Length: 157
Image (cartoon, rainbow, N blue to C red; front, side):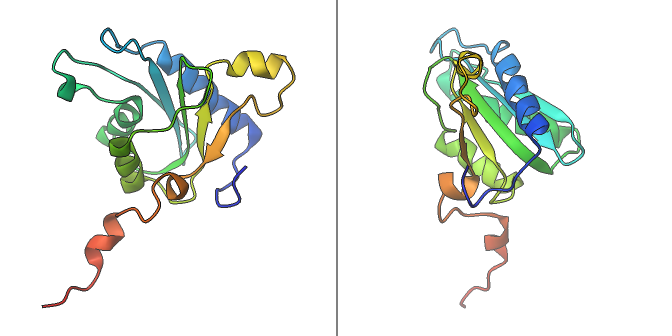
């Protein structure tokens, strides 16, 4: 666990991880064959899931993390306490650059982000206490990131 991230309850950590794994099952990835699932826990305890949705015009593709954020914001939710991201590969994957910037827009710097390996359940059943999850934060994934507060900085004339 990173020293710079908040702690959340173990049951919430497990809920958000399981929701990301479930969301991955809905991915639409006929071109890359790279399914991704993401899930946020809101400050009210609600789970918001997202999956990647590809498009034949590749620029029209949206990542799982942004799908989840757009769903939440479009319903009036803008406060989150954790994010989990998973794919079909046995190592952990990290949000892409665009997703990192969008996460930075809506999430606190120290909010935990759980990067979950595809074989999480097997690792847990084999006795790995953390399931191979890498815990990080947007501050670690996007150091020196530009955020909404930067727009309020004084400017020279």
